[in-house]
Amino acid sequence: MASLFSGRVLIQNNSDQDELDTEVELSRRLDNRLVLLFFGAGSCPECQTFAPVLRDFFIRLTDEFYVLRAAQIALVYVSQDTTEEQQDLFLRDMPKKWLFLPFEDDLRRDLGRQFSVDRLPAVVVLKPSGDVLTCDAADEIRRLGPACFANWQEAAEVLDRSFLQPEDLDDPAPRSLTEPLRRRKYRVDWGVRGARGRRGGGGGGDSGAAGGAGELF
Image 1 (cartoon, rainbow, N blue to C red):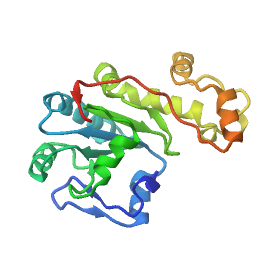
Image 2: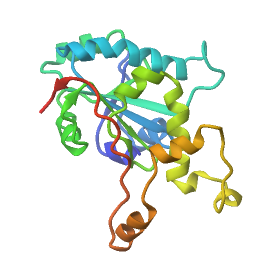
Image 3: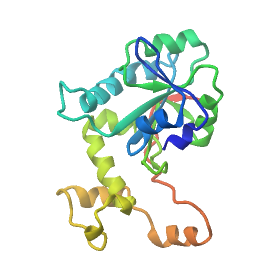
């Protein structure tokens, strides 16, 4: 996952603005986690409404006040702000564990094109492999809150068989009563995926739901 930001700098949203500028630091913060790319802007009214929801969602999964062990999740704010002052103001009340790209980094725009983001706010969920699990989870986060993480985690285990223990690969037992529903929601046509693999192509994730109302591009 850290490879997505290879050669770049990520900044932690704390008072010291700690920079993650080495492969080791990036790997420590991003690898073996579900990574959320939050595309937003301070000038977007829908983003202003959604930001407190996402903040609460993230805190309830990572803050020791709510959980004994922080979830394996990371969030990178991919600012679409027009000025650095807007970006700083938007991040001021957001969790200290959030990461963000420097305002001057053109990757902010490139990632929007790479993941076909055309509305704000948008939350792209990436599996630890770097493949897309959900193209836009904003609506899902609004509806389900922190329960989304369990859904994504189980879905990632279904799609990425490397997540499973060796003895479970052939016929893994359902992990919950709702897992069959998650299998259907995030399922992959393995025949098509296999054919793509034989042609040398990669395996993409589910398209997800289109959320938010602010147009981006």
